[in-house]
Each structure stands twice: as structure tokens, then as C-alpha cells.
Length: 374
Image 1: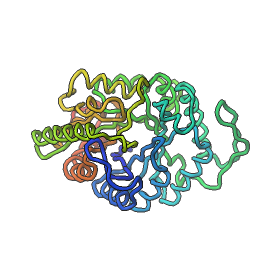
Image 2: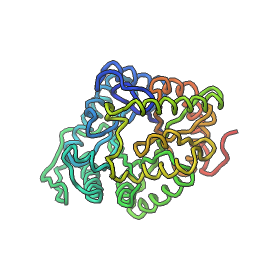
Image 3: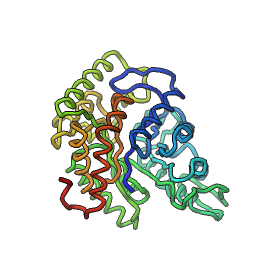
Image 4: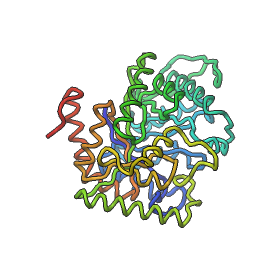
């Protein structure tokens, strides 16, 4: 099922706006979650870093504050046993009525961020750990009988749980990363593989490579998600003016110093190699500011290696059509987050999401490769 996802921040603040309020702002979390639901989002991602608030607690708050909005909880394997995570997920799923909980596995692209929580493993070790984690997590979620496991990173004997998801297989396992090790892990184990907002040609290459791994592993569940930062307005000119304004605000914010914002403004340590995904975005950003007519890399170039920072710019219809170009490449989920957090969500609810929903409906009724809507 195609989904449109946003991102839930526990406090106000972004690349373009100074952080405001406590690290966990209950009122903001409630209002921001409800704004996503009212705008028509299916689910919100809850991010993860060594400095961020607990994602499972935040997910509980979001699920309580909304009627239908789902959560995608980012989780870094290595600190909590998969059997424990399975019970935490199943409990949230039961409390929220079923079908509203998913987990996103991030193996850890920054050695320095891993070290802050006491993990000094290498990236290849982390990916092997993630593969074992996802395998054992799925078994723990699905099994109603005691299970045993003995592997490189986890060992359990007679593990069983009194709580399971409302629906069998009802908690999707997401994954992200583009190194060779990542492609192998995600292709074999993921239900949904998350990709950054690269060009259509780059995404086509990535999905083809990942599909090969999935086919060899017999993973027929695999779907893809694209993460992007849309800038939308009533007219195309107004949208590009908004993008220019966001870039100026981000530059001023960066020059003023953002050291007090560990969640969004964190950079890699000096000399530390960035993740493959971040490196790829930087390469595209330094080739051109704009690719594929409206895929904008202004913030990407300014901020340097970090999370997803590219975005499509235009009217709601133009951006929806640009996103739907990825549908032909197998992308069925779209994760969008903004720079003006609340304002962008409200704009998307009026201008973008209705257009994107309409386009998805047309795509779902037509074979892949058929003509797009008129």
C-alpha cells in the first residue's frame, strides 16, 4: 500500500529556524502530529541519534494524540535485544488498534555518533549486526512458539512473547543505507527500502541493484520509499522564491552558530567519512544546484553531509508529478519533511498531498509504464 509520510520532531527547529523550546515539548508534539493527520499524512518518521529523545516514548505520544496517524520509529540495532524491541513494537501496535506502527533500521553512518553511546564497531560489523537483528526481530514478532537463536551478535534460548501484532506481519520493517553491505542487508531483509532524494537516473540504478539482491534472497515483500524536502507554493515563481528564502535563512542560521542543536545541525567529525547516502547527495549538489528540472540541492550544498536535504520545488501539481516519476522506478512511498516545519505541513495538505493522492490513484489503476494523468 502506498503511503505518504512526514517527520515528527519533538521540538521546534530546523536548518532554517533556531531551536525553540525544550528537547521534548509535549504541546508541540501533539499539535505537530495532529497537523500531519489533518494534512492527510499516513505516518510520521521519528528520528534517531545519540542525543535524541527516546523514539518509542515519542511514538506513544503521537499515537495517543491522533486517531489514525501511524508512526515509523527509527531504531539503531546494537543497544536493545531484538526480542525486547519486538515486545515494545507489538505492545504499541495493540494499544493503537493495529497497523499504525513500523520500524526503520539505521545501522549507523557516523562512527563518532555510535561512539557516544559506547559502540565502537566497524561499519561492516554494524551491517552484519543489523541483518541478524532484523532476522531475529521478524521471527520474534511472528512466532507464537518459543524460539532459539545463536549468532554472531545475539543469542537467545526459549524466547517467547505474550504480546504480538494485531495482524500477522502487521509491523513493516524499513531499512536505509546505500553501501554494498547495506544493499545486501536491505535487499534480503527489508519490507521497505528508504532512499534519499536523488535524481531519477540514480534512483533507477539503486532500485535495480537492490531488486537483484532481493530476488536472489526470495524477498518478494520489498518496496521502496523516497525521502525529499518539497518546497511548494501557489505558483512556480513563488515556490522558487520560497526556496531562495529558505537558503538565506539556513545560511544565516549556520553563520550564527547551531552548536546547540544536536539533532538537526550535527555534522560529521573532522576527517570522518560520511555515509554513502550523504556522499552521493553531496556529489549531485556540487554538480548542479537543480537536477531533473526541479530537484533542488541548495540546502544540501550549504549544509554539507547530513540527512536528506534535497527537495522538489514548484506548484503542488508540479511537485506531485515530479514525485510520481519515481513510481515507474518502483517507489510507492514518499517521505516528505520541511524547513518551515508547521507551515510546510499545512501547505502540503492544501497544495501537494491532494495532487499526490490523485496521481497515486491513477498509477495504481494503470500498469507500470503507462501514460501519466493528463
